Image 1: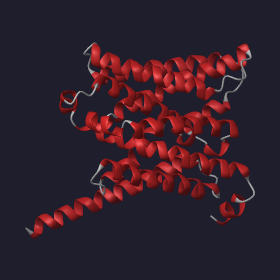
Image 2: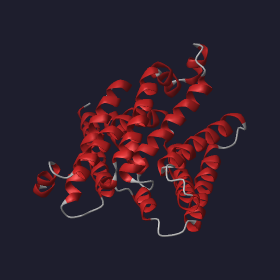
Image 3: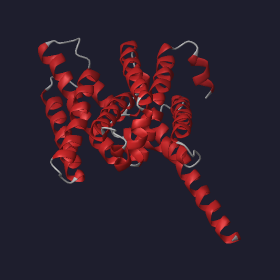
Length: 285
């Protein structure tokens, strides 16, 4: 820990990592609360793994066609949005079983990504960092892109708070009040897709769902209103990402995995404490 604090003031990559963690935490806290409340974690999982297709395609065009401006995260955004719309529209219009659609998109997205990576010349070490997460490798270009996505997610997430609230808790009531449930459901999936892209830079594709849901799940144990859940979830995500970077820095551990283990441990402790308190209250009656 002392080594981390000493290097923090002199090493820009640590400052970039912490800034990225804070920016991603804001979007994660807001959208993660919607995801947990609406119970669409599995959809978020399908979107997350489809991101590999976009990353692989972007890297392929960079190397083979020389499109150096085509950042891998651009491909990730495109793939995530397409996956969100496909899952949402097929589930709503075609009346297919949602789990089947999610599984299909999940598998096809990963397969396309693997094919692009396989056909890209050279060793794609940077794509592996997106798969497992390496927040210490975030560049200033990444930060600007993440900041832009963050502004979009937060602005839309808060601007349509009441509509998303209605869609998450009672779709039939929302329709009676004139809310376009289908539109706002698809918009929520798109915002979830953008948040997934943000978190890929922090913890990687493999563990992105844990960071999207665990802080919100912990916050849900204490908050009575959705906005309170969001605020507490943002605070917790900032704490988890910052502590994950700090704890992993000295022993040279993967920061993403450390962050998720920390978040998971806190969730289990809170859940266990809540069960014990409920049992004690029941025994006193």
